[in-house]
Image 1 (cartoon, rainbow, N blue to C red):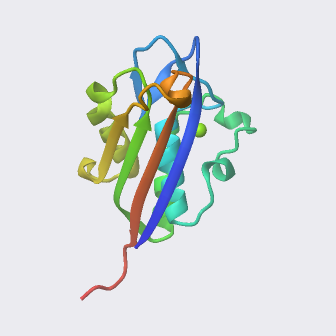
Image 2: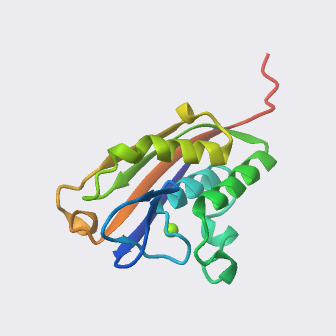
Length: 162
Ligand code: MG
């Protein structure tokens, strides 16, 4: 078994859509980024790549490449799932924590879990997403941006268990 950790931050900006876990959330601001700036999906991808020692999303999907401008991050996650399986790993579970003051994410959590599970071709029960505020402290507390921590566990598919 191997563990992976991912962390990502994006700042809020006017005139951008807020996309989290592939869900478009109605809010006054969105996240700034070269792709769709889906900070949750980015942290999840880095956790999986980390568990497989395959580098990070900057290596696989460079933000200097025009191909990834406005990219659908859930589509990139599907590719990361393929890379994981090509290395002979399967996902045991993943757990992500979104740090933001607003908006409230609870109504969207199950849809995000489903999108991420579908992209990785796993059961939704393997995907946990939580949200917390930072009590008004720091950049998330001041509503300047969002941060996400993600961890995952992967295992070799063909360990020949008896
Ligand atoms: Mg990012």
